[in-house]
Length: 370
Image 1: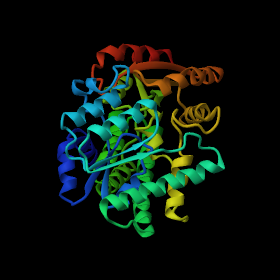
Image 2: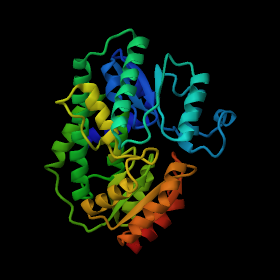
Image 3: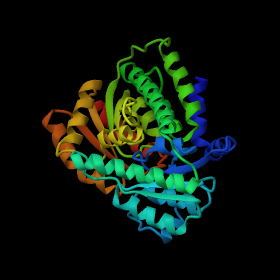
Image 4: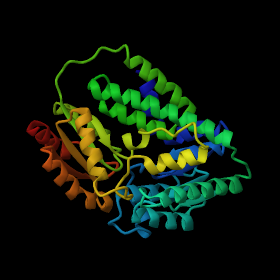
């Protein structure tokens, strides 16, 4: 499908994608975490672009970060220091894990970008005060953008951006629903590219192409080959080979709890509330990652619900090496899954990992066990 190919190209040819966006006159603001309020960046007349590690070797970043920082943090810093992100006009760092917060400090002192913002988001999200605090953080972010860019972001600007991003979320949810109910209509690596590409490319183009993909799926034949249904859980998953390995073993990824997956596009921003309040509510009420707290069993409850909804046979934890928040959460999540009779396996790897042979055997064994 030519529309899906465009998403693969946007994600893999970052410099070309950035050049296309620059020709529209928009400044590019990079962000490394799905808690960044993209709608605000877009409403400011800029382009929000999710930052992924290019997978090049770590050389210059070694001078700034310990070797036990995860590959996402080390890889993004390496790309910046090596000049591979020179197309950026600015960056925005939501406060999540310790490594990301330290990256923010190092980035601010070593980067040469026009705009920089730290977002000290609340860690505890299930209190009345967190709602007030979240909105105040976004209000400050809005003011910082306005000051740096010498513009005014109106409610109408923000409402228009919210509507655009809601369309993207709706289309991705529709496509993922087809993908989950009828594994094989599109490949897992294609679904991964649709989400990753939508985080990187021009959002108007992404919305239009995703609408075309969703429409095409309605008329595609439904595969009837039985598969073993798997849910992924983790943080960043920029490893297309992983999806290929699952499918080669007779499985299919039918759902995920990833910040580069459903956690990014699940949940709409209300369009019948004051825009900034609605935006704060969405980012506070979205499916959380381990850097946030919304209840003792919130993450386990969500994961079990996702397994039941997708009729999955098991859960594959995709663990980034040295990712402390997910490592801390894993034992209790596994315990909760075990209590429900849901089988799982943890697979530790780095972002940019491309050697399918080293993990395909373990995935094949897990799929056959299910």
